[in-house]
Length: 341
Ligand code: AHG
Ligand code: MN
Ligand code: MN
Image 1 (cartoon, rainbow, N blue to C red):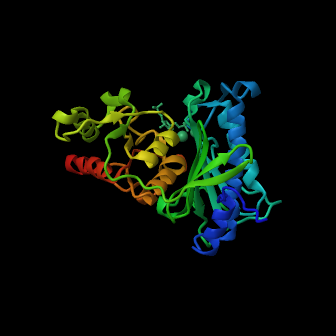
Image 2 (tube, protein in one colour; image 1 turned 180 degrees about the vertical axis):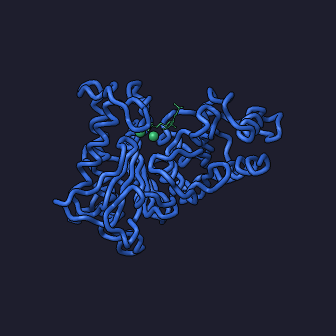
Image 3 (cartoon, rainbow, N blue to C red; image 1 turned 45 degrees about the vertical axis):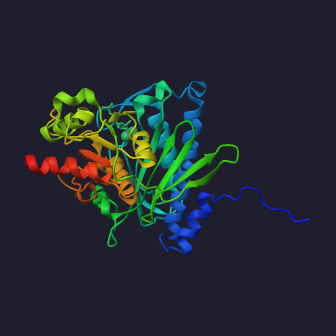
C-alpha cells in the first residue's frame, strides 16, 4: 500500500535552502544567520507567551540609551538575540535599540562578514496589556576592507541591507522575511516548533482606505501631514471622495503586518515636540528594515522628503520620520511635503 505524506509544508529551513540553491539570493552564512534569528524569535515567543506565569511582565527598572524605561521583556529579548548570535561565526558585530553601543564578536569566536541590528521587543507599551508585540531585525554586509568593527561600520544606508524581517507575537506567531526576493510569511507551528511558509510574495495594494497614525500628536504635526490627515477625515464629502478608517496598535510590527496583509498607510511623522529629533522611530532598527520589506511588497517608504532607504545615517540611534505603506498614499503625503518646501 502506498503511503503519502499528509499536508506537505515548506519549512523556513527548506525555503532558505531553496533561496540559496535556485535563486542564488543568499550565501550559506546568511542562511545560518536568518535561522538563528528565527530560532531566537521562537525563544522570545515562549517568554512572551508565559507572561505573568514566568514573571516577565513589568518594568526592569532601568533606562536604555534613549532615556526610555526598559521593560523586563526588552532586556530578556535583547539577551536572547545576543546569546543566540554571538558564537555562530556568521557575524562581525551586533547593534540593538537597547544597547548603548555596538557589540563586537569576542575574539574567542570566529567572525563573519555580516552586521546584525535589531529592535528586540517592539511595542513595549503593549506588553503588560496583552496586545501584539514583536521583534524587528536588519542585516548589513560589513564593508570589505573592514578591520575592527566600529560604530562607523554600521552607518550604511538602508539600500545596503541584505535581509530584513520581523516577528509578531500575536494570536499566532509569524516571522516575515525578505532577502530581496519578495516578502514571505512563516507561521510558527507551536507543537512542532517549526516555522511553516504560509504566504509567499506578499503584496501591498496600491490604494487603501485605512490609515495609521497617533492622532493625539496632531497639534505637533507639520502642515503637510495635517493637510493629508484632514483630507482623509473629510471622507466622502472631501477631496478624496471616500471614507477612511483609522487603526493604531502602537506596535509598529502589528501596524506594518496589517498593511502587508490588506493595505494601508502608516505615519510616525516628524513633529514639533523635540525639534532636534526628526521623529520617534529609529532609522537602523525600525525604519530601514520595515522600509525594505514594504518596498519588496510593492509599497513605498519615505521620511516625507526622501526615500528612507537612501538616508545616510550619521548616528547609530538616529531617529527618522516614517511614512510607509500603499504606494499612492505615500507618494501623495511626500508630494505635500515637497509642495510645502
Ligand atoms: P519600542 O517599543 O521598540 O520603543 O517601539 C514603539 C514604537 C512603535 O512600535 C510604535 O509604532 C510607536 O512607538 C508607538 O508610539 P506612541 O506610543 O507614541 O503611539
Ligand atoms: Mn520599536
Ligand atoms: Mn523596542
